[in-house]
Each structure stands twice: as C-alpha cells, then as structure tokens.
Image (tube, rainbow, N blue to C red; front, side, top):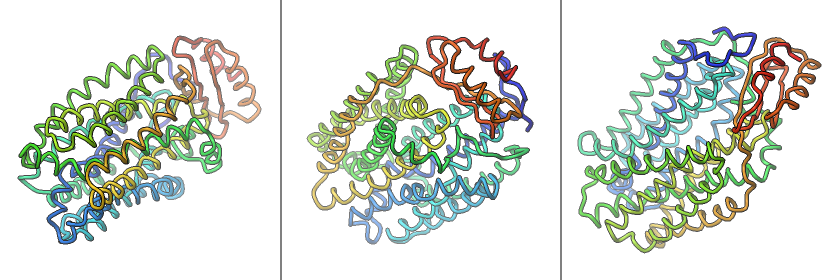
Length: 466
C-alpha cells in the first residue's frame, strides 16, 4: 500500500485497504484475548479435578503461565519482525499458539496444562501485529486503527467472561482450548488472504520498541507509576479467578455452566459506567480524578472481598464494582501512557506497558493460587488490596496528565536539516505542546491541546516542510 507524500486533508477517511487491515488485525488481537480469557471464569474448577489440581498453587501457575512467556517473548518477537518480516513472525506465533492450545486440550494432568499454556503464551505476536498495522496505515489514521484494536480487545474480554461458562457444559475446557487452537490456525489464512502485504516495512516510533529509548522509558517516574498500575490491575484480576469460580458455586449453589448469569449483567452495567467516565475524563480534562476514583474503587472492592467472599450477593455486587473499576482503568491507562510518554518513544513506552501487563497476569495467577492453598481465600483479596493501596498512593501523587492528543503526519523524503527546522517551527505553533520530526521515518509527531490548536498553520508548515 502506498503512502501519501503529504498529510491527509482533514476529513479524509481511511482507505478500504486500511479498513481491511485494521479490522483483520483487530480480529487477530481479539483471538489472543479470547485464548487468554475464555477459560478464566471456569478454569479453576476444571483444573481442580485434574491429577495434581488439588494443589491450588498449580492452578494459579496454569492460569499465569501464559503471561510469563508473553512477557518474555513479545518484545523479541516485535524486533524479529523487523528483520524477518511481519507476516512470517505472525505465522510462527499463531502456530505456537495453536500448538499450545492443542497440548492443553489433550492434557491429562495439571502439568501438561501448564506446559500448554506456556506454549500458548509464547506465540507473542502483539508487537509484530502492531508493527504490521503501522506498515499498512497512514500516520494520520493510525490512532483510529489502534482504537479499533482496543475496542476489539475490550469486547472479546467481556465476551469471554460470558461465553466461557456458557460453553462449559457443551464442550468443556478442553473443547475451549481446542476451539482457540483451530481459530488460531484459521487466523493464519486470514493473515495470508485478508491482510494486505505491505509494500515495505520500516521502524515506527509510535508502534514499536526502540532499544535506545528503553532507558529513558524505564527511568521515567510517571510512566513507571502507570506500568505498576497495569501490573497490579492484572495481578489482582488473575489472583481473583483462582477463587471466584469456587465461591460462586458454593455460596450460590450455582453450577459453573450458569455463571454467565452473573457475568452478563455485571459486564453490561460495568461497560455502561465506563463509557461516560472516559468521555468526561478526555473531554473535560478530568482524567486524573476519574483515574484515582477507579483505583480507590478497586481497593475498596478488594478489602470488602476479604469479608464477603462467603456471601453470594456480596460476591456478585463486588464483581460489579471490580469490573467498573477494571474497565475504566483498562481504557484510561493506554491513553495516559500516550499523553505522558515522549512523542518519539510512544512505541517503546507501550511495549514496556504491555510487558508489565503480562507479568501481572503471571504473578497474580501464581500468588493467588499459593495464597488460596496455604492461607485461605481472604488472603487472595488481601494481596489485591495491598497492590491497590500502593497503586492508589502512586496515582494520587502523580502529575496531572496534560490535556493533549497525538497527531501524526507523513512527510515523505526529508533530510536531517529540514527535519530540525520543521520541528522547531511546529513547536512554535499555537496549541502544539510537543513536536518531533523523525527524518528516518519521514514522520512528524505532535502533541496538541485538546482545547484547540492551529491546525491550518501546522498543515502549511508540513506541506512546505518549513
């Protein structure tokens, strides 16, 4: 797909190829989420009946093993896609995901499930998929494409929470593993036949990890707060699900195949709360108060769970408050990363963020299983409460994020001298908070005021390349 040598005129929409690429790659991301979370609401009950499954620590390890191999391999996979090509790396990752799914489906004890989950997670294609998306979309439309992926991930997570229990009676957890394995193999055909081949691949600062920028990102205290946050959020979530399936069955006399009756209304109501919260946060520049409120709600939920884990209606109510907080935080954290990260290091910041998320899944699964086995169910939520309390302190004391959004423009050929001059000119435009021109990529990245900025002057400067 060719790229324009001038910025897209305001109002111009994505091309059919861009829409096809965005939708197809969003589906691949959705598959990854489905494979990770479809089993989540019922896995602990299934695993408990396997040989070795009476050890709750191993149940948590089976849940979290996916996250460990994701964390270790997703950045190397992204770098490999620069060298070997996007699609070959994605094919390889999908094959690994399918093999892991089928190993877990055929497992006869908990150890083989752990092995299968680890192989599943080793198909760490998220960075390669993001890089391919960047190859196939113009800079002016990349935010839209990423938003499609984000909404797909959120939708697939919610669907997993409802669909997992509903499928439990008909195909069981082994059937769910087999289903995701088959879907992964089908996804290879989608990548080959539906996703366009890029005319050329190159590095994208907004979508890929730059090793040279890792030190800056890892030493940025504001970004570290957000990375701890996504770690804590997913650790608390994964720990919770080593206990919740048993608690719903025992306190409500509700078979696991009926747990969707709890999750469906919970997810719908939580989603309804999330949308206005994010709109107000973005449009009214109230992201920090809403963010701190959501972390506070997460903490209160974890504390109350330590006392109400033996009450069915207490659990149902607190699942609602947990997912209200979870949805708000899951939606706002990437936006905060984008606002805070240096413009030329956004891809690196997101790579570290995604690794932190995967580590949270692993640590939460293992810690939740160990605490449930050796201490008791209440300790699982005490663990989540400690993480949430630390996060609340970090969130409350973080700097108020700037009320900005990112705009990107393709420049075509530009040398280093022109890039420096244009960058300086763009910084002087009203409403532009940050401007970086990357000559190697032929790209201008701006952070502009949400309240308004002089777009006409920016376009004139870019067209004339200062």
